Length: 111
Length: 127
Image 1: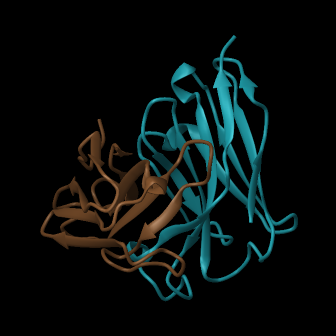
Image 2: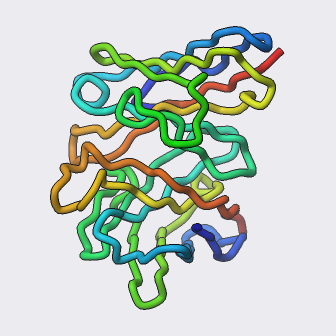
């Protein structure tokens, strides 16, 4: 069971807006930055959002991140077929020794 | 670029050893740690640990007793050793570059994140 909680699945039609949630606790999301990754099995995971809401160069502005308290969310506007992938939130966790934790992942299906 | 390599099959109770070759930059750069992450079949990503070229490291507490990560500056390569493996260690293993946000000596670990990943290598634990 993952430390960060995500819905196992999400879906939308092309052009729609989809939001994926990520719930944590005081030892991770509430006190640290949140990061989001996109992973298509068989490929390298891709960084989508760093430090809560920053996009690396090359990531379309259709992707945005936000954080409030111990929860975070990833929003994808103008959904496209190529967005079909697994999405993971992540954060540093300060419990025990400092370490990084991932959410369980959300499988996004573009209908 | 990062490229993982290693045996695709490991027997239970043995040690899984993987290498990651780094090209296009020095592994001794002051702005990066280097690390390993895995994804078991049908499951999510699991962080294994990261290491700086000086030896400073952070590990997943659940794996720490079985894991050693090394940074080889002479070969520009990082290594992963996972001891006493079982079927639960079957996964795709990824190496990744971890950006500190600048000079790692100036930034607290909360700023660090994996920004570039390899394509992964599949490891199956089976007799």
